[in-house]
Image (cartoon, rainbow, N blue to C red; front, side, top):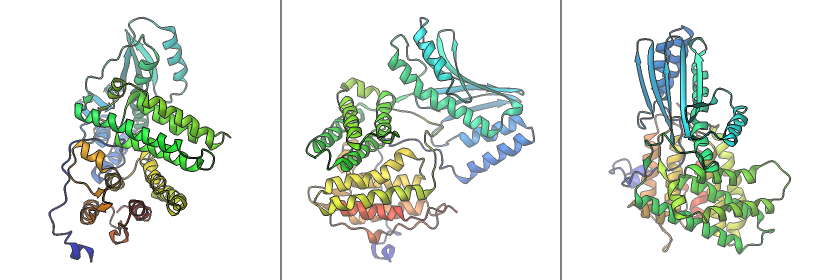
Length: 440
């Protein structure tokens, strides 16, 4: 009915010119059926003891054709490969008997006992890889014999090497002044304009949230304050997509709240607030240094059943009602945002859900997207006016693009409310909660 009424199926698809901004964390669980089949091929070929052919299929499975994250060459039984993961590159080689992979973390011009002690301690937490020293370079290495190189072992071994290497290089450089950054020439710098916008809004969002919290009773509104701080963390992670120390600080804030201890929420809120003050106090150059673009091969989070996402949305929406009904619409909207934003932060979501979340954020933060170069505004806060047709067309386009994979997904646009932002947010996330995400 709505397709006929608005002509969504006949109109030229609604486009918002893409300035090339990357949002959120990389997700590797959206592989097309052909890529999933390559995993099965790799497993079958390994069982048949066809090691080189199994590697062909395995690295084809890892390759994201849009991202260009994998380089793979084979000549007979020998070959080489490169996997991109953030600020690091995993380089490896193989022959008929073994596979070896290595990632360079940093240069250590002079021997350092504290550095070596740190690496020795961290070795105990690794399952497949290990730290190593080659000449003046600190490295991580993974190797395996061909007879033990099942796709599962290769996947988890290389994933540990890539993700730990990408994280530890920043932490080591940060903690030990004697170390020197190396092997990060492949990192793509953001444009100066994009960096400035992200720095400005990082400061703006933190400042606004801390100012709001300062005007609330810390005890009576402890739950609301926690929601606002957590929502802010997830928003920065998705919208600004920081790397390095800034990403580590965000993870620390999330960890403060979810750490299993007996401390009251008020104390956790105090500690999270203090961490945000530290982020806000970072210099302009420090923040800019953590804003860059990278290629990824592995997701640092894992997929979850969609019920987990639905439950998170439902819980947040239940908790926002009191604040909406008692004239705290801004707090209510933050709580609703948290329900889906936390899922985006914590889980590897289907891409269609990320696209719906992206639209949600574009409605809620139009000034940010305009500053980044997007020309379509779905909501005018000053006039409290929504572009209903544009929102409906965008939802229709998203569903249509993913109809083949999720034929039962049905976002009912007619259930959306456009009388206020808080009611739009509630009805929009309600629709996301009840989506049937059973794949074909």
